Structure formats: structure tokens, C-alpha cells
Length: 332
Image (cartoon, rainbow, N blue to C red; front, side):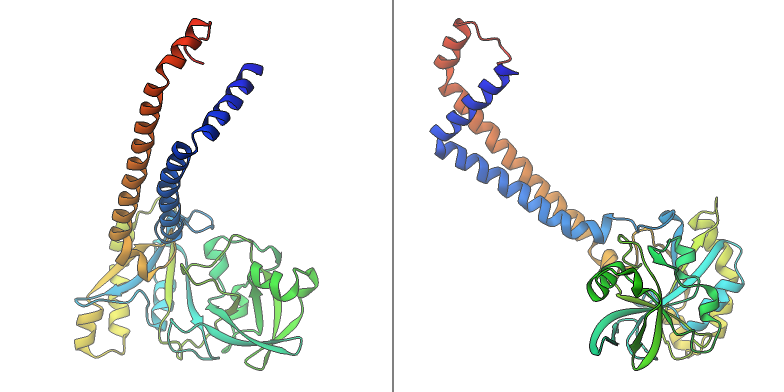
């Protein structure tokens, strides 16, 4: 151990003595490592990280696709058709971003919350009562939403908070569960808090509050529908098994025939193990290419530093010869 410490001190003295060499080596490695770390931090949640839920590989996003670019959401009635008429899913849930008491687009997220006399705008998510059950998420505090919370026309006036919002708005107090807040001037009772690592199913959009749908979905023109495959059922088998159900969905659609051909010509099942992201498909290939490029940058940086070390070793040939002559081992 003493010899190792001697070598470390000697190495540090040599680096300090040759500050130019040290600076070039450190900056070269910092450039390569920094570029890789920056790109990886962007691509990790977009392409690599799986949802922190039970068996995420069993989750699939269910929607229609057509001859033109299609969105990844479905009409509200489709949720009930898939939920009640399938033999391939152990559970089917739906969600949509919340904007007003009756939002019309998935992309609208801001809702008005009044708590402690202060009104703020936060991101909210409307979900079916079985949302957390299908995902296999357990509460951090209190309870999560249940099927009974969605049994009335407008849904029961309850809400589940995200862990971050609970900690920032309520200082992480256990007493927050059971309190009443105003959402769009309607009293809502907080019943629970999600786990710290749960961020929802939509990548890049972390809801602060989850609210239950009612039985009337008509005013929500677009939903994300996710099913959990039964054990042993593959995505290909589910695709085949859902085709008759998909025909029911198409037949029940209120779209004109021309739009049905453009938007609903086929059923599309997409893995939701990494969540829902409109960017993942579009930027998957460019992201992988970018990761390859910065990987090559790191490889070149390492090669340059290796070349510098070889040159430095050649310059120290006489010194190393003397050290060997004095009894230093080859490893040292």
C-alpha cells in the first residue's frame, strides 16, 4: 500500500511538472466524456429508460393508423370497446391531459388549482379509475384512484398528487392526504400521492395531479389507450386477436368514410414499455446516429490521449531504464 501511495504522489508531481501535457489530456477526455454524457442524458428518457411500473414490457399503446400520418391517440368510445371486448389484455386504461373541466385536446395540460388562498397553474392528467391498477403502481401516501372513482358522470371529486408536487406545494406533509383543494373552483379531495420515481406514461410531461374521468367521455376528443398484455400473449398475437374488435371501433366511429380510410385503415399496437412519446419514433434513428457520432468522438479523444502517453513514455525512456536498474519491477 505504501508503494502504491508513493506511485500516486510521484504521478501527481509529474503531472504538475508537465502542466501543458496534463491540460491537453484532461481537456481532450473532458470533451469526449462531456459530449457523451450530454447526449445520453437527452436520449435516455426518450429512447432507453423504461417506465417505473410493474412489468413495463407488457404495456402496449392501442390506436388506429392510416395512409397519412396518424396521431397516437384514440376517440373516447374506443376505450370502452377495447376494454369490454378483448381477450388479450389483463387490463385496459385510458388517459388524457387536463386543461379545462372538459378538455378537447391531448396536448393541453394546464389546470387552475387554488390551495391556501393562492391560485396556480399546474399540469394535470385525466385518467380512468383503473389507471394505476393496470400500470401496477403502489401509493406512496394514502391511496391511488380506483374504478369507483369513475362511476359517476363527472367522476368523484378526488385527486392524486405526484410526489414532486406534494413535496413542493404541501412540504411533504402526511396531513395533505384528506385536504380539499379547488380545481377550476370545484372542491377536490386529495386521496393519495404517487411514488417518487413515477412520472406518468407520457415522456416529457410530468403531471402534478391525476383526476378521474367520469362515465361520460364525450367531451374528450382524444385519449391515450394502453393495454396490459396477458401473461404469455405476444404483441403479434394481440394484434391478431384485436382485429375483430378494431372493426367494431371503426364501425362505431363518427368520422366520415374518407377520414376513416385515411386515419383508421389499420390497427396499430406500439410498445409502451418506455412510455408514450411523439418524439421517440421521429427521433429514434437520428438519436442513435448522434449517439454513435459522440461515441466516435470519445474514441478519438481516447486515441489522442493514448498517443500523448506513448510519446511521453518515449521521452521518459532513460528515466525508466534507471528505475529498472535500481530494482523497480516491470509493473511499477
